[in-house]
Image (cartoon, rainbow, N blue to C red):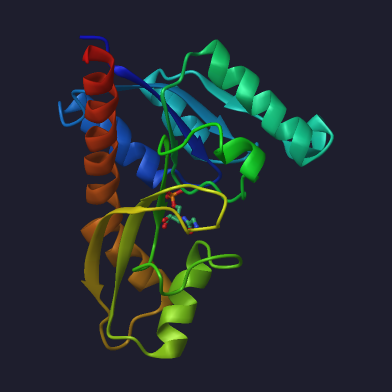
Length: 204
Ligand code: GAR
């Protein structure tokens, strides 16, 4: 059976990309194959992770594409050329326009480091999410994997996992716990769920 072809979009450290790479290597992503990594930041360590795993990686900078429209047009060309079935946003810190997301209904996944609908939407990304959770004083936070549509963090939720906030947490310690206990598990699980669905759809 042909596997679903996956592209992972990244901007930073790439620990979620690593979780996906490890899942594929360990047989936990049997329905999918990571074929491409795309970064919108030249300095992203995720690019090094892709290189070490032997996955083709491309850096696309918005400023080199003449803005958002050109950036998304270049992305589309790349995805078409690589015959990508599923896009995974793994710490991708750029909002995609409706013109882009509407081409991939329920075929773009995102991992967000909170229990949506808390601490999500425009301005809530990376460490800021955990800063906001601590400032509010919640005792439970977590992570969410959801489909991406035209509303930032607004698409249908696939998986969520709660994580405790502990006394004395800093944004960094909380971020690490949410990654370890939730993100790195949920994202490969969700990727396999959707990849299996794609393969099933082909067979019907
Ligand atoms: C992760 O915590 C991810 O959930 C978050 O950024 C971090 C990226 O880490 N994404 C967002 O906030 C998107 N709204 P990584 O580069 O090590 O995977």
